[in-house]
Amino acid sequence: MTAALAASWSIVLRYADAAAEDFWRAVEERCPQREAIVFLAALGRLASGGDDPAGRAALLAVLGHAYRRYRLLPHRATVEAALTATVARHAPGTPELAAAWAEAARRASAAVTRAAARAGDGPAWQPAQVVDHQRDAEGVASLTVRPERRLPVRPGAAVPVCTQRWPGRWRWFSPANAPRPDGTIELHVRAVAAVSRALVQEVRPGDRLWLGPPRDVGLCLDPASRADLLLVAGGTGLAPLRALVEQVASAPAGRRVTMVVGARAFADLYDAISLDKLQCAHDWLTLVPAFSHDPLAEPGERGDALTVALDHHRPGQEVYLCGPPPMVAGSRLRLLAAGVPAERIHLPVI
Image (tube, rainbow, N blue to C red; front, side):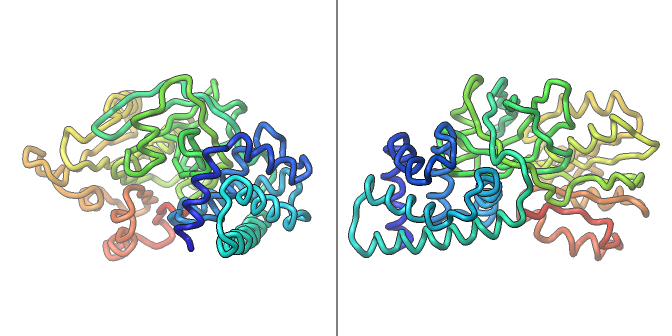
C-alpha cells in the first residue's frame, strides 16, 4: 500500500496549483495561499512515505514550525480531512486506497504534532534566490543563495532545503560560511539523489529555493570554549567545518585550528581556492589534505581523512568531524580508541 500511496501522491502533484487551492480552502485559510503549495507538498510527502530518516526529519522540522506558525494544532482533524479529500479529488482510487490515505494522514498529523511541540517560533520556511552556481568538481556544485530574510543560522548548523523541481522533498545542507553582511549563504552539494542532483545539474542563478528553520546538529562551537580545534572533513562535509574556520577568523582568541580535508585523489578536491585564501590569511590555520586513493600523494597525506587527522591530534583539541555516512558511522569508536575523550568528539546528528 505504501507504493500505492506514493503513486497517487505523484498524480496529485501534477495538479499542484489546483490541489493547493482546494487544500487551502479546506483548512479555512489558516495557511496563506502563497505558501499552501509548499505546505501541501511537504505534508503529502510525509504521509505517502518513502523518505530516508534524514529526509523525514527535515519534513518534520518544517511542518512542525508550520503548525505552530499557522496555529494548526487545534485543527488536526481538519487538516487530515483536507489532505484526504484533496487526494481523492485529484487522484481518485479504490475505497481501500482512500482508507489508506485517511490512516496515513492521521499518522502524519500525529507525527507533525509531536514535532511542533519541539519546534521554536519563527517562519517555517522562506524563499531564497540562487545568485551563483559553480560546478567545482565532478558531481559537486557550490550554490550561493540569498534568503528573502536573513537566516539566523549559526556556523556548523544545518538547514532544510527544497527545490521547486522536487516539491515536498526537503534535505539537510550545512552552509559553508559564517554570517555575511549581505545575508547570502553558500551551499556545497554532491549529486547523490534526486534533490541534490537537481541542485547540481539543473538549478541555475535566478531560480528559487525554499529554506527551512536551521538546526544545531552537533557541530556548532561552544561559545564558552577556547580550545584548539581539529576539523576532519570528508567530501562536502567540508561545508560546516569551513564555516567554523570563518567563525574563528572573526574572533580567533588565540586558538589554533588544524583542518584535514579528505578526498580520493587530488582531482577530487574542491573549494581549494577558498581554503588557500583562508590559510594565507591566518597563521593559526593549518590545512592538511588526505588522499585515500592517490599514489602520487606525499607520505603524510596518504590515507583516509580520519587516519591522517589522528597523526595531527594533540591533547586538549576539540575534534569536529563531518563527511559521508560511512565515514561518520565508525569515527566515534576510532577516536575513542585513539584516546580522544568522548566529550571532545563532535559528530553530526540529524
